[in-house]
Image (tube, rainbow, N blue to C red; front, top):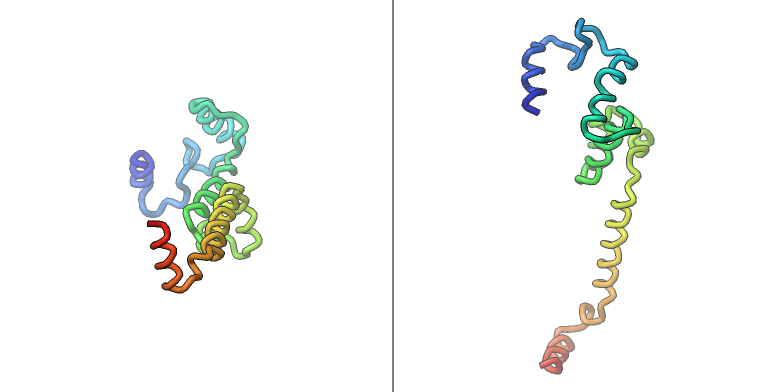
Amino acid sequence: MPELRVHLAALGQFATLVFTSPQGTPLRHSNFYRHAWMPALAAVGLSGVHFHDLRGTGNQLSAEAGANLRELMERMGHDSTRAALIYLHSSERQRAIADQIGKNATTALDPKRNQSGTYVARDRMEES
């Protein structure tokens, strides 16, 4: 982040592109991929990761952090829920939801929870 802040400050307030070629023109995919992306992946020991994967990962992390569908749509710049839902495919989140449903059902079905105060008091007396 500190490097990005310095970079943005150097661009000035009227810059339209955050990252450009050395000549200040838009980045071309082939040049960016070969001169920036591949060396960056090698530096951190990754391979087979596509630049667009960052978008999906960021959106997934946002969803897991609690962003609702409207917030995800705003972050991604999507107008349709269908486009935003493409990025929501976490099996971990599904597991967490299922676990919570199980806990809620167990609590709701607990016979002691549904007893009157008299029965709860009797149960406590019997336990002591």
